[in-house]
Image 1 (cartoon, rainbow, N blue to C red):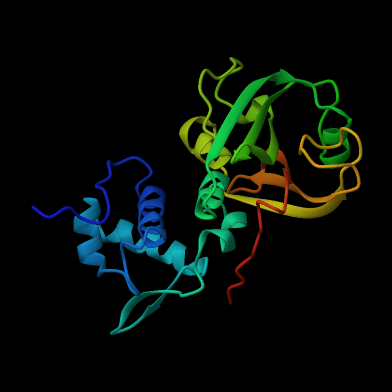
Image 2 (spheres, rainbow, N blue to C red):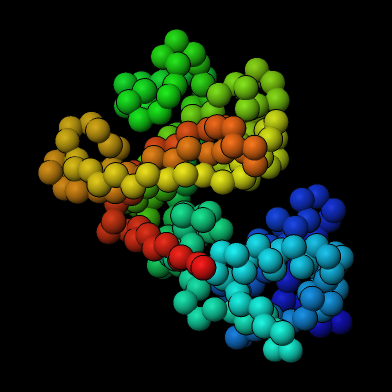
Length: 243
């Protein structure tokens, strides 16, 4: 039997996983110009046509595909990982790999009180301990991204330190939080290296981009906060605007 261009899925978070699998197939070039019909995608993924339709509607809202009656689902020609980073359809590791870099991701986490930088950026309690996750992304050995994620205890299912954490905060929330992240509001802040205001391995006076993110549930509750410092020699961000 010929291998299908996408893998079959189980019954957990099917619409989100179907979306991710279809998107990955688009980026890998497994579909050219347009997607198969909903029935064929449903058979490939071993899910219902309704679930496929939900995944495709989500991709259409984000400008990845255009659905036209009697023609089908067309892949928009502008779609590439760099234009979708802020929508979190692609992880930063995938974005760096798309540019040809060998990527190494290091992570550490613990309970910690927020430092002055976090307190200035977000409405955090200086006396409260948060799950603080530090991540670095190296591209060909050079630090391209430095990320700090801060998660209140109220977002987590228990007060125990997690034994395992996903590199993607979105995936981590879907797997084990009280509520998954539905969307994030991102503030772009141009900055300049001054002493230890960033872990990026750049000279003092060199500009870099800082992203301040607040992650929300579907009900609008703030679930987590992130500070992302990006070296624009390695990361170039684009935003797709849809009608």
